[in-house]
Image (cartoon, rainbow over all chains, first blue to last red; front, side, top):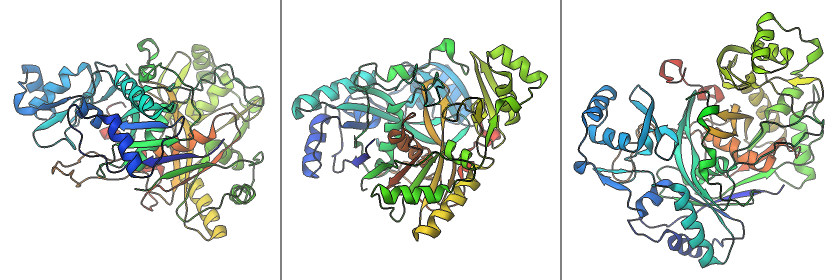
Length: 249
Length: 249
């Protein structure tokens, strides 16, 4: 296998509703002397995708429900924020210690339904894209048609994990890449069958991209080069575990 | 931020009990023209560390307990393997669908206490290192003293995750690197405090390394270059969540 390289894309300006993200990436790459190459994976932080899609809400315009007020009091949160968390979710998975873990309408399990107040501005909250696989697909097609290259796109968010401190970036949307690599039916050199081995390559790419993005550096896009992946349109929804197999539902 | 590079270290020979892993890495790097550099993170798959430490068991020498036999029958597993899983654990967290999730004696929550039969040979099972932070520290010291460079070491294993399909490699041991980056007390450019933001950089490095290692390619070591990290000896044990804060205990 060859090496993998992860490049931060610096100099992306503030993204607003309607911003042409693909154009900003291609301009940014040109200005920074970073030439996109065939097969590159372009990784976007969810926040710029959400901002470009207008998924930013003014808290003063949110009217919290009775349930939102009750949960907000219990967990020490702003009731308007709690209202958004509930609107974006299909169920509350766990709560306590000021943390609310939900299953989002897209089917991801994460803190606060992915609703976040960092890096959006005072009095504002940012929601996840309506359908981050569709967002990834739109971005991939725009990048491909303007660059003439075959590319993949991964949209990432920062998720906590049960049992482990800290967070890692994971894929919440992808296009042009199969998010899972299947070794089913493959055997090691001793003949042992790798029955359950299925690396979540899109999540590992998301984490690798985070290493060059940071949380304060305004680097919302990274280019990951050299990963061997299968082209496919299963989307990050293929990472959602079937409830029937889920021991932690 | 600069780019991050991930290099596979090819040509590492079969590792046996007592193998000098640090020597194999330095020889392998020299032969493949890969020059280690100051600050590089050397990532080892758990399996080679375990093999070098003699943590390989012949299943025919394992005598399963009554409890192991019962659980093995319920989950369709080899009772001798189940015995090892129980011996390596302090509790069973969940089981079902042929999966047994335990908390290991080291305090990690994962499938099968990390006991694994792939890539070890027929009739054998590989256990996690007794103390993978100590393993990482020994490897770091050996690599540093022979190379004259300041380095970090991460020992990785492949873990599943609740709610998400597939697995990612995560850190089960580390040395010379703080596994978490704290943004506590830092604020975004709008003044919003990043209270809970704590990227698990050692886990993201582990996932990035997996991208060049694969599962069948016999690449048990990767070099990750260009990551900004803090030097520290908190160890991967700092990634274990305090049970009092754990919503999924």
